[in-house]
Length: 172
Image (cartoon, rainbow, N blue to C red; front, top):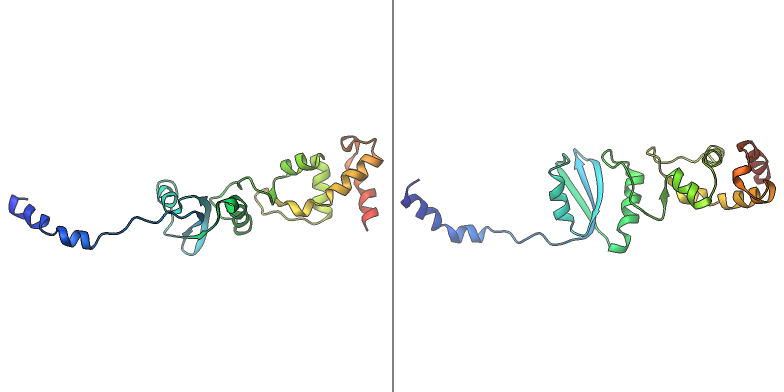
């Protein structure tokens, strides 16, 4: 390219400036990465556009969407969308108040996993298929723990899973 051609492009500076774009606004919220109308990933960020741009390096998507959310609700709403939409690229839920793994439920209620599994089966509780359950489905475990404390030597760990049958008979 010669100097005359370079000057020609420089003279188009006004055109360049008239076609310029403002920076993306900084928006905090929940974002959704999409391929062909299927949500494949849900995330949260204090700067949605910046975070979506960063995902171009590690995820394949052809569209995105977002919802503006207050910072105090980001984790709980992200977990809610991941739990219910089950996007294939989300493997875990963020720390939140409403959805927990069996291990977390075990820690919250101080009961062993076989007892929790018996509760899940007896109450016909269904998780999201990725190991997470709605914590509200386990509210009755507090009653179960009290029953165990009264009927199993004051320790739920000494009780056997078969002892649950007595408890569930009392519930009916």
